[in-house]
Image (cartoon, rainbow, N blue to C red):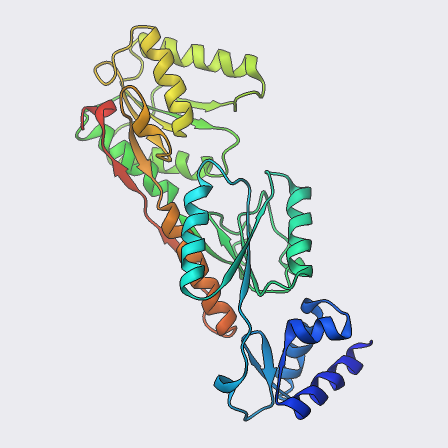
Length: 343
């Protein structure tokens, strides 16, 4: 069925029944819901119908009285563990409050798997997408409204909306704590070189040092290789960092993330380093930091709130496509524990 034939069929259905549901009509004419949704948008732009949630009515009809479909949002994240469970929980609870059905996809940090999941969600007729992409995203491939979750668009001129944690602020918060209440003057940074937030954390770290009148110690910034990837390089990095601490080059450190912070803590204690006496430690993410044998002070991103806010933003976008666009940045908190002398 060609586009004009579909348009005429849509208008004919509206004249006969007064309203139309996208997914029902798509199934009836054997095309994807995305195709019918595009047809409805084109007819709405020509003033031939009025869009409502999940469908359409004739111009001048009572949109509130039209039968509405349940909105369906696809949520695509890299993993269902570490960091993302609270994001997913926040999104799920916000969706339930708004009568939105949430469909979860896991990309496993794979661009190919990400594309596969997106194609599946779009073919199933989702009304909008919440996406934590593995890399840059081609907006032209997304025919429905979408919101980036814990990511920012690579292109400053992109119209993409996002909800994200201000990780630079979080790193600065940690440095101010180390340089202030913890009284440290030689503050280093350990950041995973595979983290999508590494650049923001580094920026916040350096700004925090500048605000405290400090500079980064020589060799004080370590870009740590991930586990099970270049193990020899990672082992050499950990050994060099331990030597720097035992040699007095550092008296405070911010470690992104707290899984690596626990590994470092165990290694340092095995080499006789007193925490927080010799070295004050702040972890980043606060996933398991409180469970360390010396509970770790940690920066805690508002993961639950990020997920909930993303659903709110996407719901507003689907309800009013012409509304001004938003980019929301949420601030993390610092949870002070024994590793910096608190708790």
